[in-house]
Amino acid sequence: MATAVNPDLLPKLEKFGVKDASICFNCGNCTAVCSLSSEKIPFPRKVIRYLQLGAKEKLMQSPEPWMCYYCGDCTTTCPRQANPGEVMMGLRRYLTTLYDWTGISRRFYTSKVFEVVAILVIAALVGLGFYRYHGPVLTDRVALNVFAPNRVIEILDLVMLVVLSFFLLTNAFRMFLKVMGDPAQYPSLSLTARQQFQNRLIRGIPLAIWVSEAKAFLVHFFTQKQFGACGTREQRTQWLIHLLIMTGYTSIFLLVVVGIRWFQRDEIYALWNPIRLVGYYATFAILYGTTYAIIGRLKKERPVYAHTHSSDWVFLIMLWLTTFSGILIHFTRILEMPLATYFIYVIHLMIAVPMLVIEVPFAKWTHQLYRPLIQYLVRVRERALEGTS
Ligand code: SF4
Ligand code: SF4
Image (cartoon, rainbow, N blue to C red; front, side, top):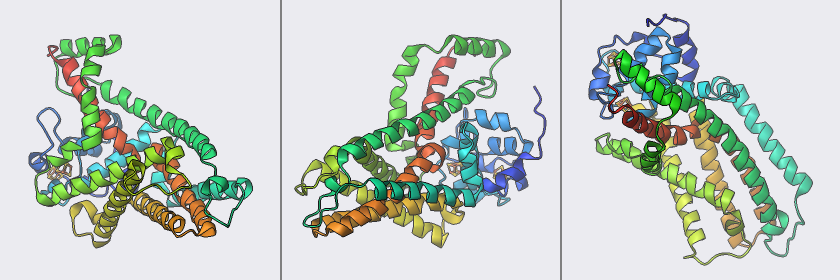
């Protein structure tokens, strides 16, 4: 079926960081140089073409934007300076807003005012909550669990986890429906094969395939190994930075959301205690990774850091500040400074909570789930398609 051209789409994507796609003349050089592009899933030329045509539905069904790890090779070699790597990045932002049914993600990505106001409102609510409901302020010793009992924080954490998971997973489910719902666009199948595949989708792909391919999800989630396939030393460094931020973020998320009763204690753990070691790893990993990325984005020397959307700054700065304030709490506790500890603890949560509430289901963090999910879905779909063509 022919696709109607919609010239209005491309200008709308400027707010997501897609600025140069119109000058692409579809030479295919970018697809040829991309180490992650394959015969079955070729990119980025194909999705740039969809963009030029304004084929919004095709874009929503495409796994390709999530297969790109933004190494920058295509941008460096594009003869038209169409910046395909940044186009893919902008597309991921745009798709995140399309999968989000609440509309919050769109507001966040397209309005700096909304972005800032949302953060300030959530931060203010956290601050007011502490002002109104904090526990006794003991000054003869650091008693954080009297000021903010970990059993109360644990309940609030779990409520937050359920709510954020609900939004994130429902958005991911919408992605799943789009990507799995159109056998026509990937790969090319005969009409009969399309019908067969459609039938299999309607009846459901066998559970055995979902289960046997689940390891693809776990491997891609924890290692981001596709990034490692981008060949140069500089690109492998980029992978390491990405991995540090992701593993640090995940470790500290688990510690503070699931393991708060062990993490937030008034006694100082021995240096070799596993909880303390995981905390140190997460702190080092996030601080190193975010500082590296912030400096890179300020210098703008590499294609991957040359263009920074306001949402990238929000993510990096809030993550850096959360980590830094966490370090300050650690030192004020060790130095036995009760008032400073309580004060910085409140500031720390006034940064961390808005970051989690906005980033996890609606903004940059979503790619941590969407990327491995897409890798998984592509594998499942390939298996389901076997024998249908
Ligand atoms: S983005 Fe550049 S390299 Fe890719 S098809 Fe367009 S003009 Fe060619
Ligand atoms: S940025 Fe790298 S991974 Fe992404 S499309 Fe370009 S060459 Fe491929």
